Image (tube, rainbow, N blue to C red; front, side, top):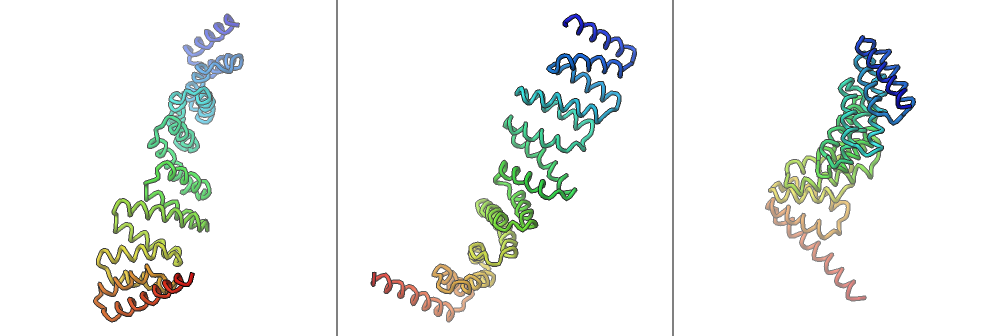
Length: 275
């Protein structure tokens, strides 16, 4: 068999020297048929197909090579071959997914995200909404502190009516902004969250506190009043209301709120005393 392979290989080389590439490819294909693990020859076939301009055929051949390398654990070699496919034709978008997965295995997170983002943009441009959302979820998991991507995912959830997922992701983004002391961005996002869900009193109260701390008493008061209307016996909200009125120098209303607060706390003490 070894002698026969050498003869076939020599025949292929002769065809190449004569510029008879298609005949050379057929000879190399005989070698691969006899030994499917002859990846170097398969790669050679892909190169020759690319030289002939048979892009789709070459890409298919290269994919076979890359998949073999991946299964064998030769991830860097697989990456190199997948990149060759994209050089032939960048529109082979699914290759970006394969590259992203390989980069993850190699621990190259930023490279993985870059490939996934490229594919996300393609899905979004082509209205492949479900695939876009699923891949963006993967990106957000890889880069948990990226607020822009979190908001993008939350908006995607919103567009699909996935209310709980949207709320959780919006809150994740808001928490990150707060952690980074990005007050102006936090305010903008919180207003967006309230627009999305007016019953999100947790964010409404938190936003009111930000307004209060940045000396925006009127805006703070508006938020605390919304929370008060939802639950007039919430002592935390009452205390914040009093602070907002105090900042606005509305002394009579500060006293009114404190009286109400004292009444609620007294009732609680009375109730506790009966136990």
